[in-house]
Length: 487
Image (cartoon, rainbow, N blue to C red):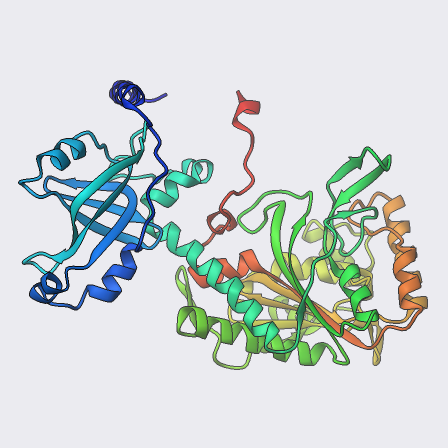
């Protein structure tokens, strides 16, 4: 509940707003800004006070009132902050400004000038209150520090926390840079459906909905993979999509049910070339967005400059868990019991579960893990030297999966067998298995070129590039439990 003082302050501001209504338009919309704050600092910040006085530059600025220093006020816009100066002789302006409260949206027109201390400011000639803030901003020194409040009231978090604004500025720059990198390499950005009639594209539990007009069950997109590969078949040989995916899974520091994924596919290439490309892309993104290749995350620094390590999943198990023979069925089933893994799983599935439980978190420096079993890779091409494995890789940085990719399966007969296996798994209770997509098989039967494709989790990438430990800190509006439901 709000404190008594806050209630009194809110009531006082409501009264002020009502007074403005009786005087005329309480929410005017006749002001146009000429400059953002940072643009003024960039253009005039290095000029001498006397030079600015000679230039006599007229500007119009607007933003949220953040500080009241008497004759000097500080407003904040999307690019930063700038001071406003209330002339001592301007009684009408002084009277208007006295009715302003911290948090109000205000505008000012006047001359850009500089104080004796070298601080840039706008000397107010005209001013306007554009929108009254009925609720006060969070307390100055403690701010909005409670994580739950920051997520639920992201607008307040953005107003008072510069670090939060910086995180999302980096996110925007990172996504723009991804588009630049891929477009420069002849990739076409495309859009594919978010409503699917089948649960396909990846192994995950889907959100279900219903289309009233079609009278059929629909699924929110798990992944766009099969649609993007249809485009490869259609002759669009390099495609990518920055897509929103939905997976009906638990919440954690690494998972949100709605997330952003980059998926890209290239014909006439294979998974090794794609690993090289991803390595180059992440290095390029870091240099161009952050200006360096050393990612500081908590107590660790992850250097993207050296070549990324590469090892097979079997080698990783042997190296990190000391398992001599990962294909020894009896030994692996014993390990499954020790590590609380279903012992009835196939030995190769147990290998993957052991890796996920015990090895992933140890892979701090950038590491590609390759050659995942067929059983957990229903869309990946088999390895020609061992058909029980696939030409698949996952990239780990900081103990977290960042990318997943493979040489694409383009043999329709093999794909039919994989889809059939997935359906059988579904009948046995595996709610993450895919459904049989006959239209995709038909597309493959028209001839699919050898292709490699990958997905990179944008949210996790932003976490790495901004030193954030929880996915909620890089999502503007993360999924939270409905407070009304709790009540």
